[in-house]
Structures are given as C-alpha cells and as structure tokens.
Length: 569
Image (cartoon, rainbow, N blue to C red):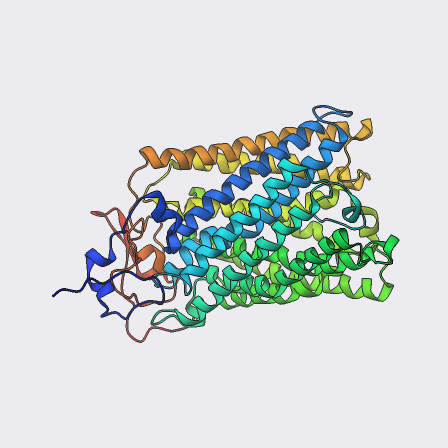
C-alpha cells in the first residue's frame, strides 16, 4: 500500500528524501484558500503576509507624514490644531519606527529569501515564524487602538516625565511595543538557528551571501537589545498605574534613567533597521554590476562590528542631558568609531561598481540612490557626534534631516529596491522597468527636496516637533513640504509598477538578473519546498559561471569546477 508523504516544514531533507523526489508531494502547494494562508507554515507565504502588512503600515505612516508637512507648509494653523499635530507626528514616528522600519527587511524580504539562499525548505522553526507574524499583528492592533481611543502625544520616544502624566494612550501603545518585541526576538532567534544549522553542502561561513551576514548580525541585536525596551515599557506602565517613582521626579524618580534605558535599545535598533538594508545593497550592487563583490570578508565582518559597536554609543543621544564631561567624551569617541564599518561598506560598494558591467535596472537605481543618501546621512552624523556642534544642533531640524537620510534614505530606499529585485522571484512576474526607474528618480529628487532644507532649518535654530514657526523659516518649510508630496508621488509610481505587473507583467524566468546565489536557481515563484533536489552551494558572487540561455530567456549557473576555491575569490 502506498504511503503518502505529508509535507512538514522544518530542517532540509536529505537529497534522497521522498520530499525531494516526488513532484506531487513537493512541487505543489496544498491549497490556495484564505485559511491555508492564515495558518501556513511556508516561510514564503509568511514573508508575503509580512510584506503586505508592513507596506500597509508604511502607507499609514506616510499619509500621517504628509499631514504633518501640509500643516507646516505655511506659518500658523493650516489644517489641524496644535494638540492634533502632537498626536499626528507621534503616530507617524511610532508607526514608521516600530511597525515599518524595524521589521521591514528582516520580517518580509528576509523571511522570504533567507531559507532559499540557504537551499533549505523553510526556517528552522516554522511554527515560531507564524507565531512571530501574529505577535506583530497583535502589537500593531494596540497601536491602531491607541489612535482610535485617545491618541498618543508623547513623540515616538515616550520621554518621561511627560509620558508619566499625559492622559493619552501611553499604556496601550507600550503594550504594543512589548508584544512587538517578542515578535522581533523570535524572528532573530529563528534566523540565527537556521543559519547555523541549515547551510547546504559547500556553504561555509565565507560562502554565504552578504545579505545572510547582515541578517545574522541583525538577529544578534534583536535578541540582546529588544528585552531592554520591553522591560523599560513595563516599568513605565508600572509608573503610571502604581505611582511608584521610577522615572517621575515628583515621586523621587529619575527621568534621565528612562533615556539611558530607551537609547540603550534604540541606538542598536538603528542597526536593526539599517544592517539588513546594507545587506540588500551588497546583493544589488554586485548582481546588477555583474561583478564579484569587492572585499567580501571586510563587508561581512563590518556587519558584525556594527552590531557590537551599536551597543556602546547610546550616550551620544544625551549630550545635553547633564551627563559627566568624561562620559560625553567617551561616547563621542565611540560614535566616531562606528563610522568605520559603515565607511568600509560604502567604499567596497564603490569599488565593486568600478569598471563593472552596470545594468541600470530599477533595483540598481534604488541601490545607487541608497549609496548617495546614506553617505549624506552618515557624514552629517559626524556633526551630531561632535560635542561642540551637537549642543547647538540638538533637538533641531538638523537631527530630523540626519535621521531621515539614514532611515528613510537608507532603510526605506533599500527596502523598495529589494522588493523590485526579488519581486520576480516572489510573484513570477516582471514589472515595467521604465516606470520603476522613473519612480527611483522621482523618489531621489523628492527625498532631497524634503530633507535637505531641514539641515538648513536646523543650523538656523528651528526646533523639531514644533507646531508653528517664525516667518523667516517659511520658505524652507514650503520647499520641504513640496518635496514630501513629490516623494510620495514617486513611491506611488513604484507601487503602481508592482501592482500592474501582477495583472499584465511578463512571466519571470528563474534567473532574470544573472545572479549566482541559490534563490535564483529555483523556479519563479519557488515551489512549496523551494528546490526539487538539495542544492550544493558555491561562492555567491562568481559570475564567471553564469551563461544566458535564450530558449528560457533566463541565466543558467554552471556547476562549480572541482578544486575551486572554497573562500571568497
């Protein structure tokens, strides 16, 4: 009697396993019903659900940002009161930070491509992966509940002592942060175990794609830093409910201690946001210039260095908080040291582009935009890490511009570029390249028009988070608001290009870019268990083994020759 082999996601089966040999058990997905999506253990479907949910958060946060810029377009009240303005910019910051930027790349793109890059059929803990998604949804519901109930007006940092006394929905928002923290921790744990235990034959640590190095370093931060913000949130909730005097000076507490706790998490969280984006850029720059990445090991180790150094510099957010001069000097020096791993990445990307056969595809256009915008963000960070200039620039629009050049110009731009890059693999459809490249150009123009004037506003003393301003700042605020709507239009074009491809896009080949890494050596979209047979890995940037196959309109990766080097070339 024949025994049916049931697909059970988990560790990759052996090459002779029936799961790799039987098409009826392996290649087809068991169901396409709504229930099969909601209770799936397939990492690809979970990644797509994350992607849709995160993009919805991006839309909401972006609309709130446009509302803020519309209010600031002219002096005086424009479309909302000062109290409403406080609620709107707080929700913009909280949604963009906790619901979009932090989970954007690891939870969506990472979930989809990490197992395929490893030649595995799923993550190590598929049920934990699904649970992480529903924890994210639950945390997001608390944020939305805060918006619908009583609003939130503390800023996304929840600074005490105001957050201990305001009547807005601080407790429900902090509960949302607490739940979101568990989602982040579980995702990081899953990624670390998967990378350690499920690498295929031939994939040593220095034959992993650089995106995997970035996700690995990010997972370390997620596990070590996230509990701090969870405990801090619980302490603030206890402060509000029990009046026990932890942070409130009226009760004998110390509000500066909250800042130490908050930034001990939130500065490493900056690298939760930016490290995966850097991993994406390493893939895009190499693949779309058809050239091996320059300085593979330096880029890999710089990801780990950023993860570790990120824990040592939280005090540079607090130069004006009254900390001792010695502490300020130490934190300033450590801040400059963090720039070294970032500079290593930028210089190696530029060296990769040098004399490469560059294809100006949509992903490459977004990658080039990232390099420019992130470099501006990094260089302007030097002014904020310098004690003498930070005193003047602290809490001005200069900080707003620097933060957005790194986070929006960095993480968000790389995220959009990564979506375009892996969209054919996710959906099996090609998008309109002309429309995609146009969106990248408009995003670049709109972004700089939005945030570069804010550097000038900051140097002239314009404080951030203010509802109104003096007439001398009006022109720069007007330019910034025009840029915000231009940026929004560019992102709208990107969304249109992707959505239209689902209906009329040409069918995508398995490997449209001529890449070498394993995710481009299975069908587009990948079958249920990703590969029909267990793949053997090689160096992921050896483009000498790539050949174009006209009948399939796809690139074919030849098997590696025996005796080839096992480390980076």
